[in-house]
Amino acid sequence: MSTAIIYSFNSNKTAKAGEKIVEAIGKDLKLDVINAEEITEEQFLSSDQLILGVPTWFDGELPNYWDEFVPALEDLDLKGKTIAIYGLADQVGYPENFADGVGIMAKLVRDRGAKLVGFTEVDNYTFESSHAIEDGKFMGLVLDQENQARLSKKRIDNWVKDLKAVFK
Image 1: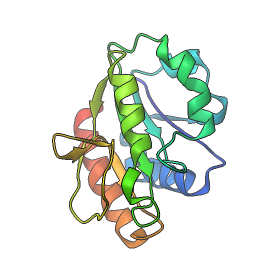
Image 2: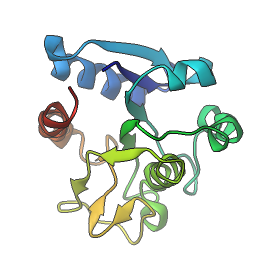
Image 3: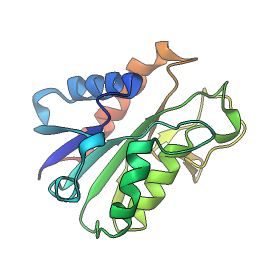
Image 4: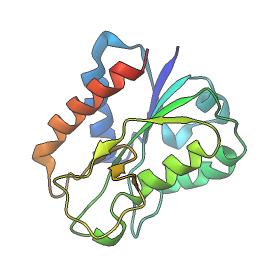
């Protein structure tokens, strides 16, 4: 099984979280690190297991680099792929669409046949609504560096521990 983590190298907080995820995974899993701003369909399809860094921008939108990749993604068959998503969001500044980017991407890849893993609890967050919630859980790891930066390391460590049980 091949595994890749894909995030924008230029989106500071998402990139730092991605680096911490890579560090937490350590040598347990060979991991290709790919810049989301330069991703191709071939690169996306070349890994069996993917970790996607998807922050929420503005009022619940995907960042430009992911939004520009959506048309290509819509044409891909992702059956057999296992995908985990992490995203950064601001529950105080954008409580009505908190972490929507995670939900948008999760539904997009799942609708193309991917298996989603890495759901996390919604406890200890305060927001009005989120498209990232399904069956009472976030559809990935949600980090709020604006308001809860001190909780990120523990959240990442717990999430990576769960991913290691699924990713081979």
